Image (tube, rainbow, N blue to C red; front, side, top):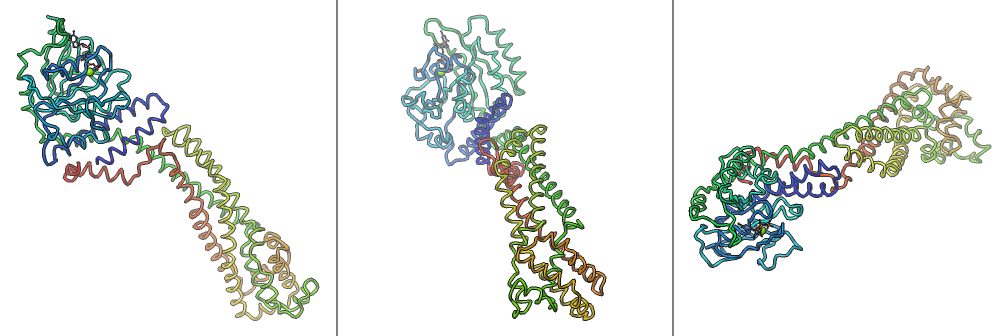
Amino acid sequence: MLEFIQLLKQRYQSVLSQQSNEARRILYQQRIDQLILAEAFIRKGQLLNGADAPPLQIAVAGPTQAGKSSLVNVLLSCQVAGVSPLAGYTVHPQGFCHGVSLADCHDLPHYFGRFQQLQQSQLSKERYDCYSLTVLNNESPHLPHGVLWDTPDFDSIDSATYREGVIRTIALADVLILVVSKEKYADQSVWEMMAFLEVLHQPVVICLNKLTEGSEAVLINSLQEKWRLARSDAFPTVVPLFYEKQTGAPQWSSAYTKLLRELTQQVSHKKQARFTQELLQKYWQDWLEPIRAEHQALTDWQALCNGAIQAALESYQREFLNHPHHYETFQQALAELLTLLEIPGLAGFLAGTRKALTWPVRQLMKLGRQRQPIANSSHEVALLKQIAEHTLIQLVDRLLDQAEHSQQSQWWKALNSVLRAQRTVLLQDFAEAAQNYHIDFQQDVEHTAQQLYHKLQQQPMVLNTLRATRVTADAAVIAFTLHTGGIGVQDLVIAPAMLTVTSMLTESAIGSYMHKVESELKQQQFNTVKQTLFIGSLAKRLLALPEQLSTLTYFNISLASLSAAEQQLTDKRHGLRLL
Ligand SMILES: Nc1nc2c(ncn2[C@@H]2O[C@H](COP(=O)(O)OP(=O)(O)OP(=O)(O)O)[C@@H](O)[C@H]2O)c(=O)[nH]1
Ligand SMILES: [Mg+2]
């Protein structure tokens, strides 16, 4: 699950960097924050399940200039956190070990992941993904032993750049101290953050800083109201901190000395796994919204491709297989048949042109038999190429339609660019495949001719009539010329001699057998064209186009990895263990 959340976060970050729609940018930024929180909370669960539990963690958080660092110093009873009147002064999480050693915190680097642990003095504004841990030797009366974290603000303009550190530190905390000043307590950013953190179920203390004597009652009431609007858990203890002119720092009243110690008694990690599960479930559907939309777009694309391929096959049937003038393949089989018949007088015919008198006619036919010119002149190959071109034109239309009307308009636009870029290569490959198919299919044509020849041998009457007819010899010459490239396949279809021979055969005793082999040949041809060309070449390439979409712009998370993660989430028994 952790890996899946990290993958999701990383994809959101790269998609965000390319996103220009402002509303989407805001939404995606929120989701990245949620994912950072989820990732951190899962890591906290791992930390708690480790061999030795980490010491108590308390985080001080709040808007800029609220006095967070000042309060950290007060609670620790020493000046260790940097305080400044410059907004956004603290930019790294800084942990201070009170009564605990660095060795006690040895698991924290694992928790912080890519954040590097440095000495406080090494922290620099050049790099935000760092934190420091400083061991203190003094004992403060206000704090139990543990790590107290000063955190960067979450509301200044720059805070977006170091927000991850804030979220990671807050998710680690067993207790959260929210510091707000009287100027800042009503800010929307504060209450959005408090609402966002409710899923962590942490005990919270609110420190209301920079107060003037007597103003606290009204402000606390107002705070309560804001809390109630933002969260559904009980309103926490509010510690009023008065503005101290002489020290320039907040005063922690002795009345609250025991507060934090008491609060830490409430800390329980028993429900960590359940809370993590709740957190994931709360956001899951939102996080996956663009991924599901992409999957939907992919499904829509598959449907478009299948529809286009279906239409292409229908037009192949209509324009070729079932077209009385265009269908040439069976005629070719008949031409092949003629080369198998030993036709008296044919040699004489050829002698004039070929000086091959001594050769048996069948040998001569073999010599002339070439498949390439047939494919080149084939009306079928030309038609297949046209159908492929038309299919792509139709698909581009549908893509543009989707780009205009679908919610995933960017996805469709990008797919359209990929298709445009690939169009020529796709068509070239298809044309090559069509040519190869046509050449290979000559074998089936020859096989049909053989079938007819054997049938004729059983019908000596028909065979003899054929051999004795002058028109058969004419047709045989035409068939021969076809192989030498002298005529094209289409010429063959309309050649009168061929037409006559065809009618003779159709009306003969083998007429019904001819119909049978013709329809078998057609069926075989349809299946071959469908499988090798439209499915094996065109559809396969078209369906693979979305893989070429840039992962910078798209999530590209597979259905399989999404399903595996969902399985973990819903399968409670294993899910909790995996967390
Ligand atoms: N006089 C007075 N000044 C205070 C008090 N608390 C904080 N300040 C001043 O407020 C300013 C900001 O205090 P910080 O503690 O640095 O505030 P912060 O919340 O850590 O601010 P960032 O790190 O910038 O987010 C400093 O100039 C402090 O001296 C207070 O109780 N009294
Ligand atoms: Mg600070």
